[in-house]
Image (cartoon, rainbow, N blue to C red; front, side, top):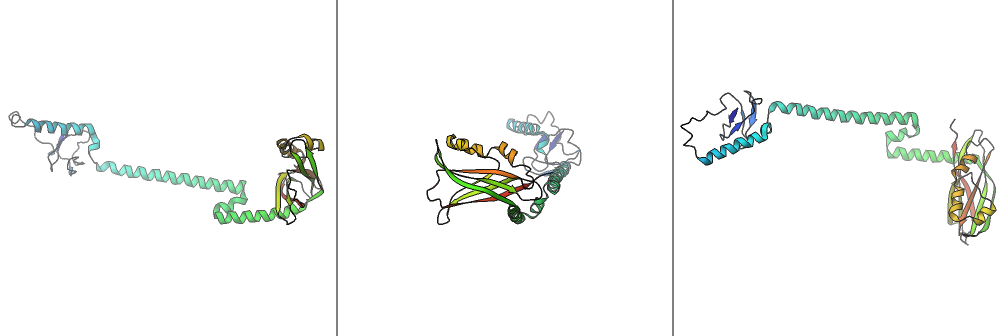
Length: 272
C-alpha cells in the first residue's frame, strides 16, 4: 500500500500487514506523526500526467520508496509495539531481583547451618566481623592455656651444608578432659634488649634425629618439620594427657641471641 505523509508529501510503499486504518506512523523525512486512513494513499497518476513529471522528480520519488522498502517496518513508530517492550523490561528486572533474593537466602541458610559463627558478620558487615575475630582470639587465648609445654631444650648443631643451626625441641601435652588436635606452637628468639631477632610457627608432630640435623640441607629440614604425614600421625585426636612433639630449626642464628620463648598459639577441637 502506498502511503503519503500529509506534511511533506513523501510517499512510502508500506507492507499491507502494517497498513491498517487508525495506526499511527512517523515520517522518516520530516518526523511528522500521522494516522493511517483509506485516504492516506495518493491518487495513482494517469498516463496524461507522466510526461509533465520531471525525470529528477521521478528518481527522487523512486529513491524515497526504495529507502522505505529497505527499512521495512523500522521506518515507523507504532504505538502498539511500545507497551510490550516495557512489560519485557519489567519482567527482566523482576527476574534479576528474584535471583538476588535467592542468592541472599541461600547464603543466609548456608551460614546458619554450616558456619553459624559467621552469621552476625553476614548480617552486620565489617564491624561485626571484627568483633567476631576479637572474640575468637580471646577464646583461643583461653584454650591454649590448657595445653602445657614440657621437656623443652635448645642446642646448636653444625650442619654440613647450612653451617651452624639453632634447634629448639619439646612436647605439647593435652590438658583438656576431651580430645584435642592440631596444636600449633611458636618460637621466638630475643636479644639482651628483648627485641625479636627471629620467629617461627608450626604444627606439632615432626622431629628430626641428630644425624638428620647434621646432613640434610635447609630445604629438606624445613620440609621434614612441616610434613603433613607427621602432623596426621602425632597431632590428631590427642587424648587427655597425650603429647605431641615439636622441633624448631633456626638457620644462621644471630650471635646476639640472648633468650628464646616457646608458646602455644592455637589448638582445635576434634570433630565427632
